[in-house]
Length: 93
Image 1 (cartoon, rainbow, N blue to C red):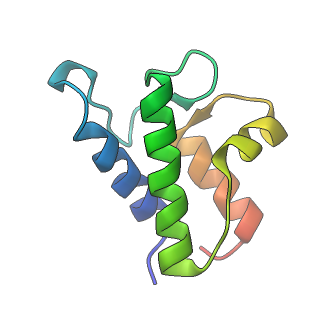
Image 2: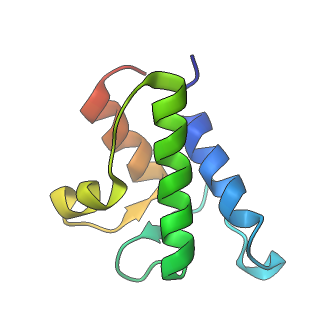
Image 3: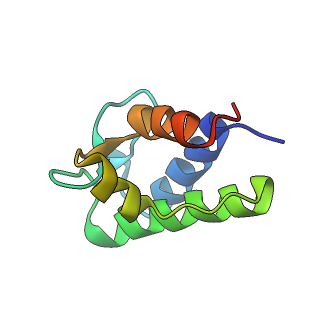
């Protein structure tokens, strides 16, 4: 069993494989990943969300739709607040 932090890191790593060195993101960044003013273009927002959702399903059997989460929270999502929201929603880690 992993943890939300490692799953988010995995999703960030997957996105970083597809973007330039200047654009690369890291976990400590409080840059918006999903939502208004995201540092990621729409395709990479989808890539990030799919990667994270797949990791949650395969490792924890948890189903999540990041874009529904965005609608629920009404706030742009950073790596830091995604982890906090996942902990509140699933209470496992």
